[in-house]
Length: 314
Image 1 (cartoon, rainbow, N blue to C red):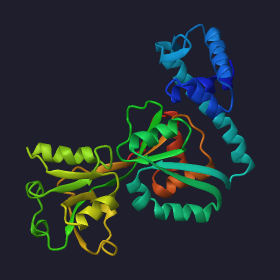
Image 2 (spheres, helix red, strand yellow):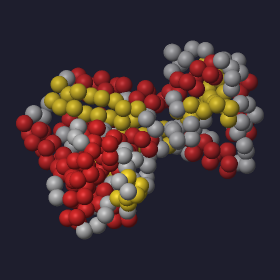
Image 3 (cartoon, helix red, strand yellow):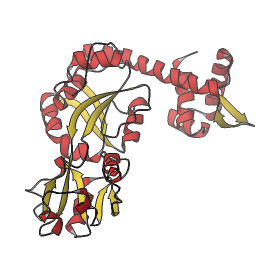
Image 4 (cartoon, rainbow, N blue to C red):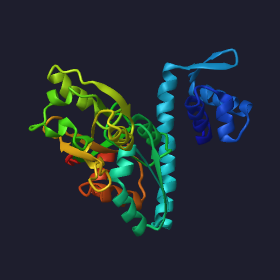
C-alpha cells in the first residue's frame, strides 16, 4: 500500500467513478490507475468499487470506509509536509479560504487587508461557493479554511468553530410603506413581495422558521446567493429585501433605507470549518484570530484534537 494508490481511489471517487477523468487529473494513464486500484484491493482483501465489465458503477460498503480513512491518511501526510514548510519559512506560503459571497464581500475585507500587510509573502486565495461546497473543499484539501453560516454539520471530519453572531435588516426603496411600520412586524413584511437569500445561504432557514412560527406564508418572489443582487432588485422596487445587517451601507446604498429586524429573527452564527486533526501553518492561526479574536491558537488546537475543557463558543 502506498499514498499514490490512496490518491488514485480518492480521485476516481471524486470524478464520479470515471477512471479516465481521474487519470487525466493525475497526469497518468487509465490502465495505470486501474492496476493500482486492483493492487490496493488485493492487499486489503476487499473490493472498493463495484464493477460492471470494465466500468466502475458504485462504491462498496467497505469502500466507503476505505475512502474515509484514505482521505484522513493523505491529510496527515500533508500535515507532515506542512510541518517542514512551517519551520523552514514561517512567513511565506499559500492560504486558501473558502467562503460565501456575503462573508467575502462584507465580513472579510478588513481581515484580508490586515493579513496581507502582516504576511506579504503569503499567497492568499479566496474561493466562493455555497456552504456545502466550501466545507467539502476543505475536507478535500482544496482549501485550508471554510467560513460560512449554514455549515455542513453532517460532515464528521469537519470541526466547526463559532465566530460571530449576526442578524438581519429589512431594506426598501426610500418612501416605501414598510418603512413607516413601527414596530416592524412579520405580518407587515408578509404583505409585500420579498427578495432574500437562496435557501442554502445566510441563515435562510431562520427566516423561514420565523414566518412559520407565526402561521404566515411570506411572498418570496426572488432569491439570490448574494446581497448585492438582492439590493439591486430592491432598488428596482420589485419588492422589499431581507439581508444580513452587515450587508447594508447607508453611504453606498443611498437609494435604500434599512430597518433593523433583529427582534423578528433568531440570530445566525458564522463558523470557521477546519479538518479534524489538521496541521495549520502559523499564518493560518493568525488569519483565524484576526477574524475571531477569541479563537486563539490554543483554542483552535484543542478543538481540532478533541480535547475537552475548551469552549470555542461565543
